[in-house]
Image (cartoon, rainbow, N blue to C red; front, side, top):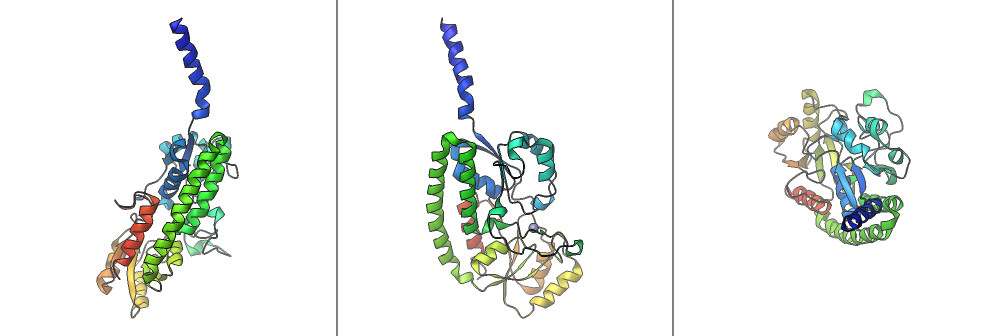
Length: 299
Ligand SMILES: [Zn+2]
């Protein structure tokens, strides 16, 4: 009898299991993994495909990513061609029917926000450009909030039983985030009008948000590493301009920035770029606080 009741109890668990199954989220970048944590909380399992130390433009569709994709209920990435070298392969080889493009389990964050640098015409001479516009949207907190709303909406569709929990997580996130944006904007007001040199144009949304001007990039064209001739051009272009910093992401090569910094005494500022990009930036809030703190240092 006792054995039987155990068996029945066991069966009950098996039958009940799908209700409590967590939503498996495949996040291409750490910022979307972190946002999924805010909105999904305990109800989701998050696999983050890349780290802040990796250049997401250049990843390979390796077996560990295929394995994670096989389990995914929701694919959550930047889009706008950022992951074009690896995400389509993962989806074709390992993506289930519920995570194919244009299904409920497919979120390309940049599809839902206004993009900067949308190109009218693109050809190969322009380098590694993103024709749909700049995909590096994660450093504008206003756009992040829009993406959070999209994510909450999708999670409620995928996991209807817990819809209220996702809505309430969104509400909490949204009210804290909105207050933080105000505080960040006050704190960063001193940065308005500052000029910077970047390596790649991956700071466009941050700089646009804070009113900072990009004077030049170390890459001669997007995705093309700095050359000696190009660095000389940058040097002569910025002469006489009051440039505050050379911005570098954790995964970018420092050589060009160091070359320029040595000749101009402009400090190199290594920003976290995404969650985990430095030891302090361990969540989305800390990412923005760190970014503003580091940008203000040279001033
Ligand atoms: Zn890019």
